[in-house]
Image (cartoon, rainbow, N blue to C red):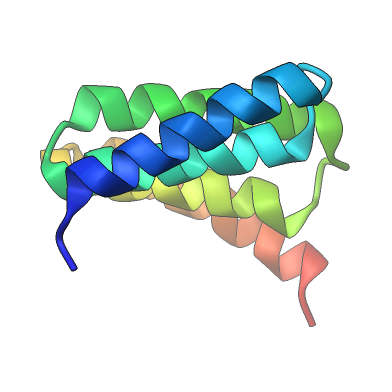
Length: 107
């Protein structure tokens, strides 16, 4: 609907609650950081988007097996941000990391 400030507020509130209720590297925290990153990307605030997606990826690397599809999602989302920034070589590198994981983990 394009109501980015409302979405951001909801995701940030979710992150606040989960930060209190869950261990620091719980995958649900990664999900919140991912969602916040998606909103920032849609808003054109790419540095904030990258920061959120990178935090999500850090948590996933700790909480999930190395070839989990959710890791690929994070790599892909970071690639999307770089793509939107016009940094195509960086975007490609992240897209390729995502593709390698998806090829190993999906049928």
